[in-house]
Image 1 (tube, one colour):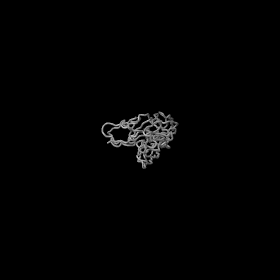
Image 2 (cartoon, one colour):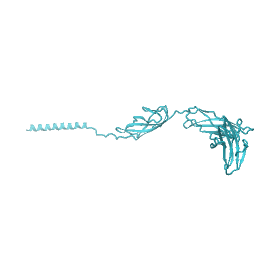
Image 3 (cartoon, helix red, strand yellow):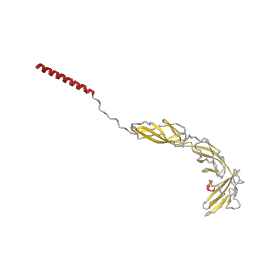
Image 4 (cartoon, helix red, strand yellow):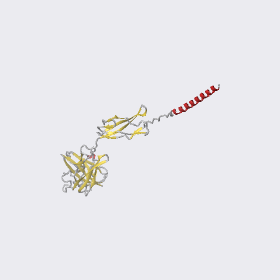
Length: 322
């Protein structure tokens, strides 16, 4: 009986020790706690996209994705959404356009808004032709006559220059001539040499003007005719009087209401231009008669310029209205 009780106690002790060891060994196999994945951050925009390109010149496409911590930030594709007149196409991330115009490009970010939901953004690229700068202006006038308006013009080179319009003419150095310009018309009240500057806005590139200076020699009028040497006179008549006005002379006109007329002979002319104080009067173009108001007071220099058979003719008279 006593022996049996001792055996039972020993067995119980062994089981207790074994159970404790099993429990202690099981503690080392516990799994780490579950951590949820980070929240998805969608794309909100793409900035710093290109906006300009040159026809025939490849352009690498790129942009910056916002926000900075967006989950998917890789621009996975670029496509021409609307080529317009440009004929644009894309190879990978390289944009090409053979002609000028405006093209619309679409950038895509796969899964940019969420799993299976792409983010897309359209943007415009303005394609310009290859810029051809101006290299010079030729066929500029080099001679003028005192008090005879001279229309300024020139031929821009090269012929395919991007900007070929002479946008302004300015007297750079009048010298002794007292020269001035009104638009594209040059006038000089005295003889000498004047330097004129022709300007072509953006002639060398956007924001870079092309300028060229040239000289005009101003000669006095022929004392025998009162007009520029080599220019035959066109006689002026006041109010259809049968006697012509003195070339280069002056006539007093009483101010007030009404008008007075100045005309030239009724012959065939290729063109007729009238100038008042050096400024061309467009409404009198190709008209044989100029009608002036007596309300305009002061000293008025009236000049007519005609062309017949390629020959330029001028006539000038001063009217003092007071």
